[in-house]
Image 1 (tube, rainbow, N blue to C red):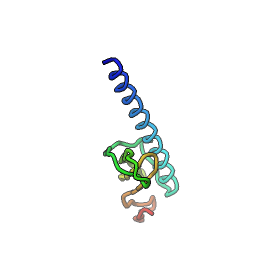
Image 2 (cartoon, rainbow, N blue to C red):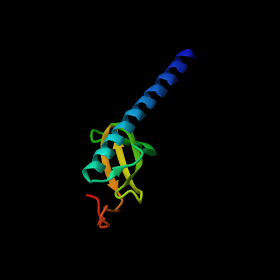
Image 3 (tube, helix red, strand yellow):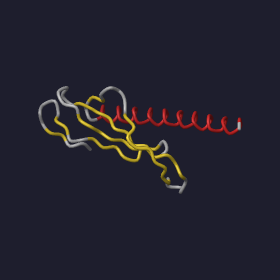
Image 4 (cartoon, rainbow, N blue to C red):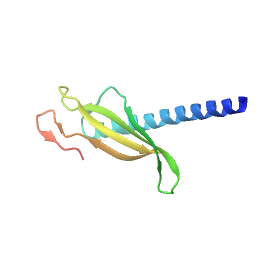
Length: 109
């Protein structure tokens, strides 16, 4: 019984650490993409929306996570973005269309 408890505890610690590493990657990539587009990554955080098991390119089961974040271009409006990771690899990065500081609508790259 004690061995089973230790296994569950170890699995929980691993899952928590894996989630923290994925979240950190999502934060860094989101911030870098926002900076490259001249917008501000707000709150320096991402919010977990989905967690699933999916197969990677090698056919192995890995954890898929989807995060949401917010950014601003002119300080007046908040816009939403989304980033998904399969394991530690970024699979998708999306940003809503936004207005540039000069008032021109910008479509994300």
